[in-house]
Length: 198
Image (tube, rainbow, N blue to C red; front, side):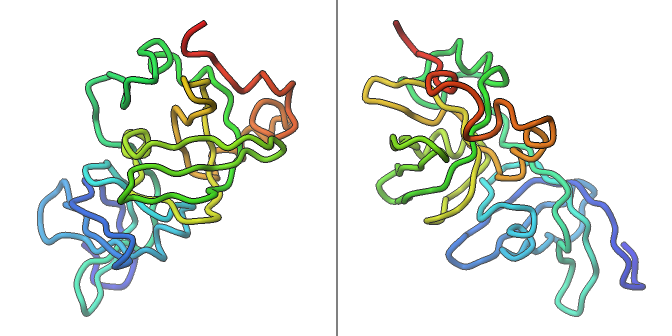
């Protein structure tokens, strides 16, 4: 760790993060003291929360109050067993998530206590259901009203539902490629829905 104020790249695992408190801690893979992760640093990465046990790379600095993350470089959701986060999403969907287009959206509301919420895809009127287990599976701990996110959406038994949630910045590469499947007006209405069952 540098004492001259310069930044050092560190990898580790999120020990816990509390969006209400506005901070959490990362366990450094190399050992030593836990690293403070402040909500403002996470917001600069385009996220309002991060799930416990997510793997992160951060640039850190030594301060009078200890080691703190100054910039988030990457976040990888917690490891899972490859199974769907909820029964309404077929295993085949999980195995081919990357083939579903990313859709920019905004959180309408999300209640962590109730375990669900809704978002709206830009340019489409229907609400998209977000289950808390899908949220955790995607590496988030919570969502804020109005937060910009990207969704991969499937048709569930009661309507559209999120199969994966990603940071808003995930839509940027799609936009740079000429605004095809990652943009709200890219393709016909049915293009962003993959049916779980016929």
